[in-house]
Length: 418
Ligand SMILES: *Cc1c(COP(=O)(O)O)cnc(C)c1O
Ligand SMILES: [Zn+2]
Image (cartoon, rainbow, N blue to C red; front, side):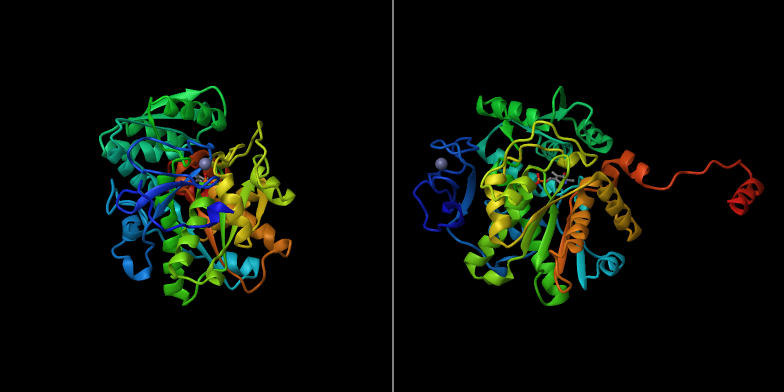
């Protein structure tokens, strides 16, 4: 497959050793001269390419920009982002009968999700291209990140949200950071269709994960996991389990590992098995993996409590499906009840996440039960967003407050009686 091949011979259209290549037909394009999200020739997805691929010694500093040698710029519009914790979760390890499970908590980014990693790079590219209005469709977290990074860069931001389907914390963020919020009568996929039309007609610069530069920033999740895990364990993880919505992260992690392998930083058998988890009510990627399809079929009706992955048409599937397959991974669907149970299990370890994030643990639990994950596997689960993003879901999953009288005696009596 053409996209597996990381050509490093620099074409004349490159700028400072960076260019864009179509994953379907291989056509190459100048990276910053004009705005382009897909291939002019065949409409395929684009990928950033580099004349030089870095190895571990080329990285210095902390956060996303530690990995500047793997990115199109040396610095960006930064809040700063990345450098998130890799938590130990002994309770979950014991319950699942696994020696080593770590949780990479991306909810600890500046706006509370991994989207910040993509935005710091994407907004830098927008500045370089010279646009003045940024836009995205969002299930919530992309809009929160875009609003904050757009504000920081002094650029106008426009976000399209599916009306009534976005968690409260996320809308509040977009609102306070000053984005124009358009509540669309439709689901996320409808919002993305509209914003793509706006972007194509030059109304705004698109910062969804269709934008190849956003995925460059998100690649740093993989770089950080490899370094943190190796420093702690002297080895790399066997498997990375992550929630899948538009499949941008899956695509970004796959690219990260291909580049590390191509530069000689890791061996091919060091590449972790990419394992995607979707909600049962929005699982086109799982359907494609289970049926051995090389494309997804769009789901028009999607429903799940995990609103961040309530997506029926994952635009990055052409990049992500080969990633899951060629790393020896798989994809699995989990119910909303399983997601809530996993959210509680993480909370019991002190790790607070939003529902979509808990899908990773729910998926791992399911794959342990089915025997797809072995006892001796070293696993990293990605938790993508913070608990406070969706306070309503957290309150529903958690314990109820108890009303008591406003006296010490009354409180003591209540504690004794219950
Ligand atoms: C965006 C998002 C996802 C989905 O990520 P993709 O890269 O689109 O697959 C999952 N969880 C949370 C919390 C998100 O914000
Ligand atoms: Zn093409």
